[in-house]
Image (cartoon, rainbow, N blue to C red; front, side):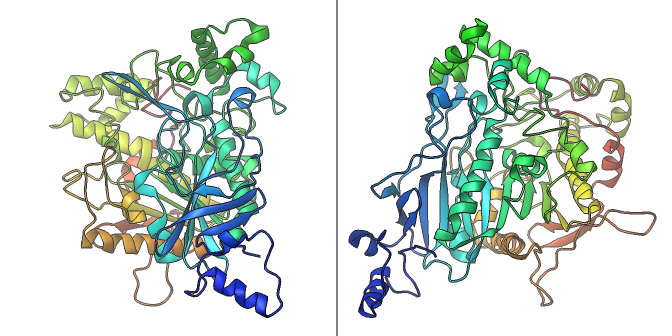
Length: 560
C-alpha cells in the first residue's frame, strides 16, 4: 500500500481520509492529524518523512538509507539506519559526504560522515500506477559531489515524465575507497576498499524495500549515471552484490572496461595512507585510523586531480579489483558474459578528451599549450611499447593539443563505450549507443565537453561554480524533452523508442559480424536528432586489442 499523503487527483489527502472515515474505513494509524493535512508526506518502516512541496513534484531530501559511517563504522560495509520516531524533516539542503577541494588558499573541507542519505523526487499528485524508478549515481571522480548535485536534481524529470528519481550519496575519497590489509582481515569477505560501491548497493536495497511507499515499482529500477556515476553503473553490472537490484542500466561518459587498480596496488596506497596518519603499529592500526579526524583522513595523502600528467605521489581514490565486490577485471567479466544482463544504454560526449569545466584533463598539465615534442613524449610515456603505433595513427599534426584531446577521448571514452556496448549486445541483451554532440556556445564554443549532457537530460539550468551560468533556451529545452523521453521510455520498458508513430527511432546497437552484417548503429543527440554508424571505427578497431589503464591515472596506461 502506498502510504502517501500528497494530493490525489488534485484533492488533498485529508479530504480522502475524511471520506474514508465517513464510510467506516480505517485510516492507517501512522498518519497523524498533522501529517494528514500535509502534502508530500510518506510513512516508511523506519519512520515518517515530510518532503518539500515543489508544485508539480515533491522532493524528499536526505532520507537515511544507512547508519553513520563515523567511529567504528568507518571503513565497514554500510549498516542499517537507526529508525526515528518524530517525522523526519526532509525539506532542506541535505548533507554531503566528506570531501576536500585543494585551492591556492589551502584545502577547503566539507561534508559529514553521517552522510548515507538519499533524495527522492516524485510527481505530485503521486503516481496512480507503480512508476518506473531511476536511481541516479552521482558524478565527481569518486572524490566529490553528492546526490544533490545541482545540475542533476530530479524535480523537473519527475514532474514532466512521472518517473521517480532517487539519488543517493555514497562515501568518497579515502572514506569510500581505502584498501588496507588490516581492513581486509577484519572483514568477513576478506576484502577492503570498495565501500562507496557497497553504499550504492545498500541504497538499491533501500529502493527495493521502500520505493513502493512513494508510488514506485521496485521491480522496474534503472541505474544511471555520468562520469564516476557511469563508472559506478558499469561496475555494479559486474558486482555479485547488486544482483536483482536493478533491471536496466545507463552508462554515460564512462570507461568501466578499462584496466582498474589491482588489490595489491590499492593496499600499498593504503599502507602509505596509514603511515602518513602515524598509524604504524599493526595491532592498533585500525583503531588509530578510525580515530583520526575527518580533515586528517582527507589530507593524509595529496589527492589526484584528473589530468594527463599527474604529479608524482598523488593518491587515486577509486574502485579497485578486490576479489569480492569486484571479483575480476570488469572487462574480463563483460567479455565472458559474467554480468547482470539488463537492457543497457551506453554513450559519450563528442569532445570528452578535453575534460570537464572542473577538471581540464590537458590544460591542468599543459596550461600554456602542447608542443609536438611534449605530445610525443606524453604518448611514449603513456603507451610504452605501443607508442609507435599510436603515433602512426595520431601524428601530432598542426595542433598537438587537439590531437592529444582526440587520443584521450578515443582511448578513454569512445572506444571503451563501444567495447561495453559490444559485450552487452553479444549476450543477446538489448543495447543502445549514443553520441552527444549538442553545442552550447555560452558554455564552451565548438566543444561538447565531459559532463555537459546531464543538465540537458534533467532539464536544469547550468549554474556556478561547476559551469558558466546558462539558462536553458527553447532549443535546449527541446533537446531536453527528446532526451528525457528516450531515457524515461527506456526506464519504463527497456526500449527508448515510442513506437510506430513519427517520433525519431533510436536504432538498437548491433555489432558487425562479417562484411555487410550489423553496423554499430547509434543515435546522435544534437540540435536535431540523427543516426550514425560505426562510431570512430578505425580508431576503435585499433584500440580493440589493447587493455589499457586510464590515461588520467598515476601510472602509464600501458602498465599491466
